[in-house]
Amino acid sequence: MKPVVLIIGKPNVGKSTLFNRLIKEKKAIVMDYPGVTRDQIFSEARYDGRAFTLVDTCGIFEEPANELEEAAKNKVLESLDDSDLILFIVDGRNGLTAEDHYLANVLRKVKNKVLLVANKVESYDKFEINILPELYTLGLGILFQFPQNIIKIWMS
Ligand SMILES: Nc1nc2c(ncn2[C@@H]2O[C@H](COP(=O)(O)OP(=O)(O)OP(=O)(O)O)[C@@H](O)[C@H]2O)c(=O)[nH]1
Ligand SMILES: [Mg+2]
Image (tube, rainbow, N blue to C red; front, side, top):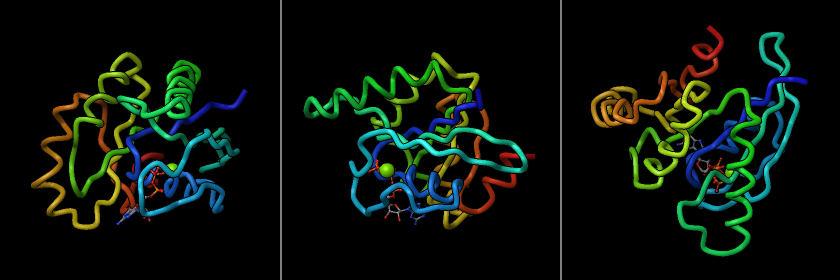
């Protein structure tokens, strides 16, 4: 079986945008408001000659507002063990919130396969000063940036 790469993160951080970019298709719906992705979306992907299954998710709601969110959350929780790599996406422009910390705590149990990805990093200078130090406090692996050069660093 191909390795499974799971994209996770709180709503609206750009998970589906990254998913589409990596599979080079507009398969997942991208909107400028949170809570767009519900069911997990799977796609076969290939990068640098390596094939893998990429999964876009709704992330994990700390406090699901309804049964749908509860079911979606449980599905993602179940998927963690079955994934080979988990891309934990955070907002590199606005920094962390309680939701990110909640997710980080959940992911600590599978820490060795988690990569923290800061998305929406349009100004690296601002990011480095305002956001980067905060991200290190999560104590989760290496930091990658998107969109600037994640793919380059990821595969190197
Ligand atoms: N400025 C900026 N905006 C981005 C970036 N990546 C995504 N966005 C925007 O952020 C918004 C949310 O993107 P999505 O990809 O739908 O986010 P998501 O995490 O899948 O959201 P949910 O499915 O609702 O959890 C959209 O308006 C995107 O265009 C980025 O790198 N920079
Ligand atoms: Mg989405």
